[in-house]
Image (cartoon, rainbow, N blue to C red):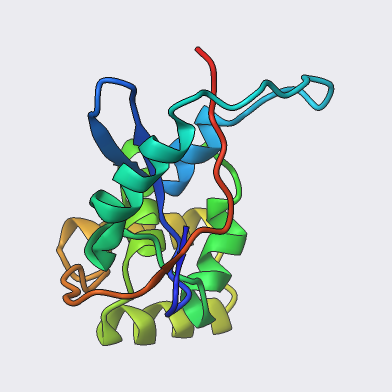
Amino acid sequence: MCAQAGIDGFGLALPDGSTRLLTGHEALRAFEAPPGESGQALRQDHDGLLEVMVQGPLSAPTALAGRLRGVRRSIWNRLGETLNSHDADTSDALEALYQHPLTSEADRRLRRAIRNGVTEEDLAIRIAALHRDGALVVEARTGRDPVRIVSSMGIAP
């Protein structure tokens, strides 16, 4: 789904009624399929499960991934487009960067590093260190944001 402010969210609703939010990486992994794989018909309860997600976990913007702009976008383009090649600290930092806005200090420091030609390896070390120190992102957001469903799909185990 996409909220009015341009924030994307991904979620999983199971037939037993349980729900959980997915990170961008988890959604990509869940929907990974070879190009030739054919689709399947939607489940009978697809719309009901989608409604549970939109009115439940996806209704709060605190857990939704943000639209990437500026320094966040530059870092994501350099480091985030590779799904499996980072250590755990860097992967956690990338996910936080995708989910939340940067602190002004992190924005300033990372912008300067990029301008000075930092390597991908050094950039990964910097964001992991900022994240470990709690200085990478602002994690608190409050309020509701109108939701617009962009697409929905089901996956079979």
